[in-house]
Length: 312
Figure (cartoon, rainbow, N blue to C red):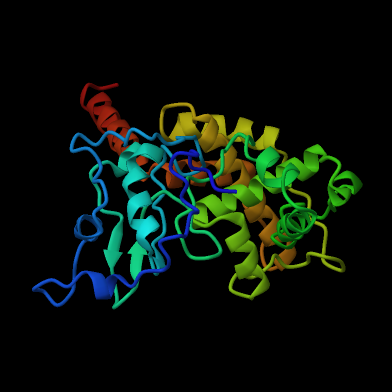
């Protein structure tokens, strides 16, 4: 399950759950930083140049890496391993280089803002799931039968099967269809963007902390959504129009999923029609990079102004 290297071994809980409030008290009433916590625990700080520790990490391209998506803060009660593992954040996502990703918010609680996922036990569990589907093998095919069922049921409850059902092969644990792989990957993408492992998200779903998709599991309306291929074509046009550049593969994948989810939500709700593909694609382009969209818009306005002044 963990996605650290074997050298790092983040799931070793031998240190036990520590109460940082009892370990680190400063002149400011115990408000210490993660770096101070690390020093007080006699751990090795990350190199000053921002490079990753010698034991190595496994960087991977996720639905969050390389985008302007803001990783949500997650409240945890960290133990010794969590403070140590937080030093690897910049190795998983270079945008976190030099940043303190653990902020003390209570006597024993911290808010974690880094790129790693939080597991069902409330601890750091390595980087997000690979956006290209590389984690399906280790997370599903190598999982126990009960975990396989939990993963499939969770993807189904979240609506990622879009009115279909898990295949017989997936239910028996002997294989997966393209539909299964797409649903599992969308659930992984959702988990990555939520900053939690899929097991943690499944637990929250079962506890009612995350609302399941409406109409899932029988009786609900079946909604037809645009295909990924059609969405990709619309997104290419929209990105060139709004941002004057082509979308990246990650932007295509996430934006197409957003469009499909919006169409599905509107269709099941029955309150209003979903916007056209052209409009939805342009909205996605604007949301992906608002600064770029503004710069392009201003540039176009200036160009038109000079053309008018020149009598064009």
